[in-house]
Image (cartoon, rainbow, N blue to C red):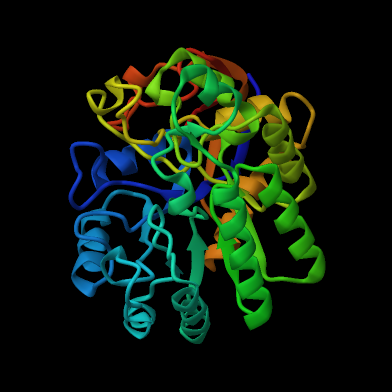
Length: 357
């Protein structure tokens, strides 16, 4: 046994589906998944029903989160109703203590509106976190556009969709001198854009998820919708670029984009919604593939999964610690998880790092 005491984990990007989609996940099951994965804090995305763009919904999430033994911070929408048409009330967000704003899976298309969002967000101490995707380019694609999509005869999601919006956001942040956080980076092109921007002093931070530096689009050859997420698994070149960016600091943190769906929704490969769960496997997967292989030290993984995401959110380092047995392994079994979701990309795999709290 090799027990290691580390600062509790923090995730800048999860979906707890509450309010509106509690058959997929709710605050209570999400909190249980957090504790099972070693997390003390997460930031919930606002694409709920109704969307998180008002005091009532923000307070609903906060009230329901009380007494769970973890910190669940709501992010709020950039635009009213995530419509992409009118900015939400950023001054009200600031009064309510909101720190991050995003339209997540419905990124703001209008460039002038996004420019004004950057300016107003800076005035009210809000960080824009953008899901970089041009939906016109996606146009109904369901997996990465390339060799596998052609083999399966399905419409693909072109990498230009991510790279173009990443470039736009970096240009806006550089021109206006404001911050931007790029969500779930998945392409080598976005990595290069972010790396170059950081070298110029642009105030850009970025996250990725374990599946982007571990898996590739080849997983989709099984036609198992549990391997479908957005952005999608991409090529080996992309995977290697994400891994290198995690190692060299271009990518600031590892998040999960924890996105539960019901088994019935995930049953049809072609029609299933995108998304995978991750809170209960993220540390073990990252430890197994990055630390145990000697690519990074444990201290770097702690920075990626605890220190840096808390810093980006505006929090001090965690004073709460969790214990993992780094020598003990387990076979990932989604049926034993605390999350309501079973859509786990690491199902059936052996991972190292068992929580002992």
